[in-house]
Image (cartoon, rainbow, N blue to C red; front, side, top):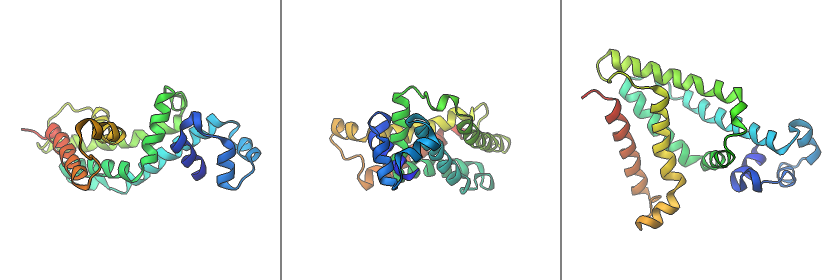
Length: 193
């Protein structure tokens, strides 16, 4: 799986070759086809494992043990830092989006992996609403998409944005400023005035 993840992340679904994956993994190509049938099924397995990794890491945050605002901040910071540490996650998502999510659309496993996070986020939002710190009516799925999107867009477009604005958006200071901005935007949205 590690060899397949590296190949798909570097070259996308279209550019990846099972021959190279087999060579990297030290396996016979026929063995890969025996277990996965085809390159598309292997790609889906990689996507599912990639989502499993981020969701397992999120569980280690123990968000339900934190005050609501701290939990939202921790999830936001985690998401940014995870994307920085795992650029292959963004590359794999980019590849799947180029293919219209045709692999994930039928993946029950991915839906099962993501549902607990949205439920947890919903519980955090409700606790914040109940204690008066958060405004009501926030959709936890929309909030998570905003958290992920604020980090994802910046990082996946860092080259073009750096060129357009004439700034190195991956410099340590720029990354720190971006994380502060994301936290301010997200908390500014959920906190009651």
